[in-house]
Structure formats: structure tokens, C-alpha cells
Image 1 (cartoon, rainbow, N blue to C red):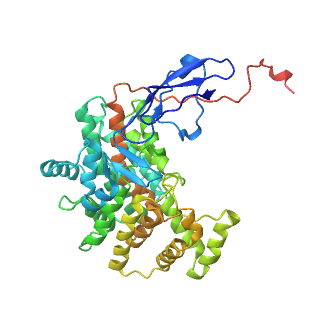
Image 2: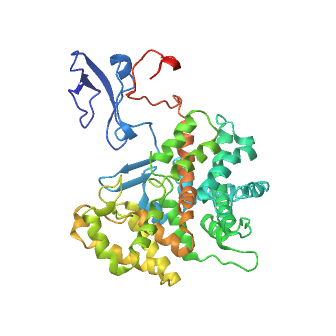
Image 3: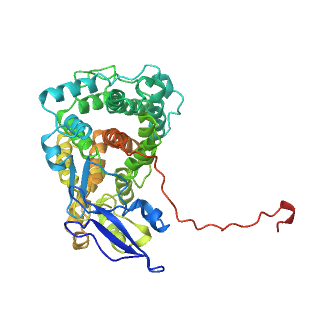
Length: 440
């Protein structure tokens, strides 16, 4: 089948496809969004032609309509509800960004205060959840624990599982945003054998998370404002990223009318994959492999020559073909954190030297392989004292608001149907059944 008319700017009302075998033509509507590429509506293609489209990994398929996040990877643009990520990270707080993702607009002063109150007063978790943790081995991967405890929330908060009740949807959204940091901190404390620290209502979202992770009952803990600001920025920069693998997973699970806690647990399971949420952990593992600044030239030689499948982790991005707009914001925070802590960790020094060399090397400049958000977030989190196993958990804490916003938008879509991708079948055609005694 060949396309004989392509969408123009402004778009045509339809494109005509011609089946080269039969000569039949099919008119398909063209839909235009606010910004970004026009899309060809293929929903009626099978009815008209008896054929499906084939798009492995959905790299050229718009699976939904959304008003939440827009990305232009070629230009390095990321916007939430029309606000650039640079403006949100520099001028806003994570709570403001959460409100905007959920409600569509940045809050005014009264709306923000009310929203912060609701989130703050949902941060505690049911006391019986403490016993839930004892069922996990101490050396269990934190993401394995998070999959279990987040999915288990539906057993504790079944008063907000009616997905068609707007009030219950709101309560579930607030509970998930508020309780994920508490569960993440409990997961960390459990792994190192320290007592759980209850949340404090006098602290901000980021301050409270750091307190629950690093305070101990034996002494007073004061949250470092530089670290809290960096943590808030990390949360903002990871809050949502359009229809990525984990978000698509949340939407697919939600299309079956599953409860929101189960959907977010599904998103966490998908995020656990090293190709998705493990990039900042991979940066630290790469630095471990390099070992010393003197080894950087040899390592980069292997990267350039593609020797031993050597890859420069934390540079470049699948979506952003120019630069990652989140990276420059986080670089400033990275520098501030390292200055504040006065860290002389050889891995962190190695990372800074690797960044300097790569940014001055024509090979990487020509290919636009610049540091991405994962490069700097991994360095910051290590400097703060988080083990690499916790990096993806922190990603999940930030991304929960994006997941629940996307889920909420999908549930409120009047034309919602359960997700059901098609396939190109390449197995055996129908054949006769052979009795066991006659098989050779």
C-alpha cells in the first residue's frame, strides 16, 4: 500500500492510500494537535481494507490524545501543560508542578496551600503496612519491594477504588503522590536495618523525603536546604515524560478498569527495566568500570570504535536528538550539591572529568552526544548518600504524579476502550492434529 497524498501544513482533511495490489483507494482523516506532527487516523483502516498497520514499539503511532506533556526531541523542548521545563524547574516547586499536571493550570496561592495540605496529610501509611515489609528479604531489590507494597495499597485503601467517582479518583491521586515517598523511604530503611521514620507535617515534600530516608531516632536531623532544593528539582525534572514505556503501561493497565494502585504498581514494574529507569544507575556502573581518570582516553577510544560493545552512559537520549533540556538545569544543582558537601569521592571527580573531555571532543559534539538528565541525577543521588539500587525508586517517586495524571486523563476520556494492540502473525497456518502415537 502506498501513500499518494501526505499531510501538509496546515493539514489536509484526509490522505488517500492506494492498495498497489488491487488499486483500491482509502481516505483516512488527518488530525492536528496544538503543536507537533499531524496524525493519520487509521482506526477505520481495517474495516475499509482488511489490513492492520505494522509499527513495532509504536515508534510512529499516537496511542492517545493528551493535554499533559509535549516533547520535541529535535529541538530539545519539554513542556508540561504548555509551561517549559526550564521555567518550571527554575521558578516553581514540585507541588506546583504536581498540581499543574493533575489540574491543567498552575495553582494560585490559595489552591497551592490547599493542595499542599491534602498531600501533607496523606503522607502517613496504614500501620499494618509496617508488617508487610517483614515478608521481604532484607537484601531484596528495592524495586521488587515497591512493586509489592504499592500494589498492596489497594488492600488498605479500598474506600477510593471507584474509578468512575471523581472524588475517589482525586483521593487516590493525592494518596499516591503523598505515600510513594513514605513507602520509598521505608523501603530504604528496611534494606539497611534502620527503624522507619514517620513523616513530618512541618516539612516540604522534598525535605520530608530526605528526613524519612536519613534521620534516625537517636539524634536530631536538620535538612540541608541545598540538598532539599536539588531533590525538589530532580522530582520536577522526572515528573512526566509523555507516552514513555511505563506511562503507556499505566494507561494500558488502566484501560482494563484496574484500580489506580494496581496501575501505578504496573508502571513501577515497567520502570524497573534497565532500558527505562536504570539509566542513572548505569552511569555509576560505567564510572566503576572506568575506575580512574587516567583510563578515560582508553575508554572513550573503545566507545568511538564500538569495541567490546562499550557505551558512554548518560550521554545522548532516544527522544532528544539535540540536547536534553533537563540536563542543564540539573547540572547547576549538581555543581551546587558537590560544593555544599565538599565531596572528594573519586567516582564523582571521574564523572566531572569525563564530562569535560566528552564535551570538548569533536566526535561527541558532532553526534550531539551531550550529558542527559541521568548523568547528573546519578551523581547527585550518590553524593546525597543513596545507594545505586535506590535510584530507580526515586525515579518512581517523581514519576507517580505523571502516571496518575495520565491515568486520570484516560479514565475521563468518553471514548475509553480497553487497550488491544493487533499483531502480524508469523506462526504456522492451520494444520491437522496428529495423534501422539503417529508423531515422529
